[in-house]
Length: 436
Ligand SMILES: [Zn+2]
Ligand SMILES: [Zn+2]
Image (cartoon, rainbow, N blue to C red; front, side, top):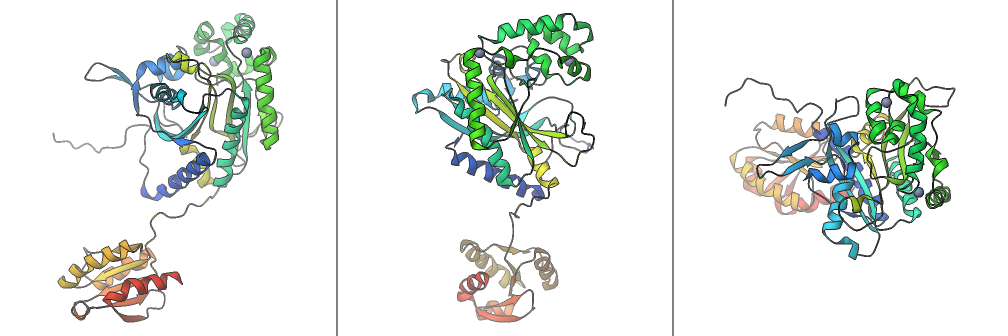
């Protein structure tokens, strides 16, 4: 097939280029370190899952399931979905591998790509990456608080400024129906003023009306009844405990009675983490609302296991959007150490020395010295230019004569001073010089 097409990455996706990898590596390292520090072990689940998992987990009205999921039929006839979020797949793995037999709770973390078919806009992609933490098998509110605390720890270790937490409880199967009825009563007389999506949501899941980002819907919810006033005793106590544990660990939080999450499987605690952004203008001073950017969120999902056909198993999880996190790091001027930093450059001149250079290169590399080369170049000038550009401390120059004599020229790049070193001793000499 011939084409004149100029290919580009699919709409809403992007390449992570070498110059950006250092930020990714830094976040991955911090996430892994924090996760391990709190007793989380890594899990990787497939990018594809049985589409039914998300249909069951999300419920009929979750936007992601309704219109944002990549679903396709495999050649074998299975309906598969590209993972839109991490929790459901991890719970599937938990059930499939009988992790309920392990000491509970089981703490798992992952960093993985997620897929959502939505209109690309700033900070929203069709393929994005999430760092996720799941604590499965324990309903103690202390774990809700621990996850929220971990957000701050990750933020701190990355050097991020001004993170804030918003938190709410969305109750349980006992208290939600009563609240739902109240909410319906409130909205029923006002249906005409709702947006199109909300008119549909009100029939299936009125709770999602609180979540709508349309201005007219936002205005209307100001006087809507709050779930927090209608929690059953158990949910009330649970939430109270979460907040007390947060106070204990010094996590600053704000109660947001309108916070609900996009998936139906959430119960009790839901939360989001924001960056209070001084750089964005337009915050409304009257309500003390500053411009803020959501970095992630999560919540408790005590019904998810049962929804997926397993035994009732409580759980709580949190996710962080990697792209946003990295965007914020760059904006706040947070540095990440370079991943490739050669220390020595190996210059070769002539056929024999090029051959000998190959072996020396291996010796240096095995000794743990980061060595760069330009084996494809023949001129010494061009090679030394490359060495300069890389900012190496030393160059090793192997000419035809040196190759025959079994020596090599060592050049200090800063001073330009050169000396002859015996080939056998060169690794040792370089190592000593690099220590200085
Ligand atoms: Zn309840
Ligand atoms: Zn709406």
